[in-house]
Amino acid sequence: MKETDLRPCLECGKEVLGRRDKKFCDDQCRNAFNNKQGLESSPEVRHINNILKKNRKILEELIPTEGKINVTGKKLREHGFDFTYITHLYITKTGSTYRYCYEFGYLPLDNDFFLLVKKEKK
Image (cartoon, rainbow, N blue to C red; front, side):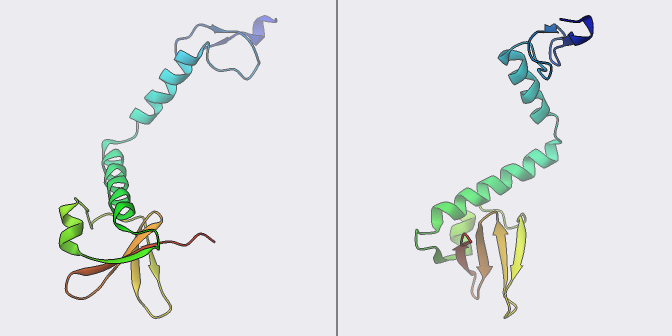
């Protein structure tokens, strides 16, 4: 092995042996490095992502296998649903605006009711 082939581990700095494209000396260092990368994202981003994941889980649990159901806003709020955060909007040809949290969405209806839907796979 040439001296120029020697590289330091990105986590601990020890010499990395093996393939030229290898970046870590062992799995422990690789895992530690990758775990730190996730921690470096901003607390605000982590907070919003946690809310989106929780909203998605609530919708997933409430929507039956056939894909649609009407529920009250009260029921959603009781489960901890936060209407502030969505991933995207879908506006139908008739002008109805569905709010989505990943593949699960809801359409606000009258009297604090919501139509919950699951996006069909194409």
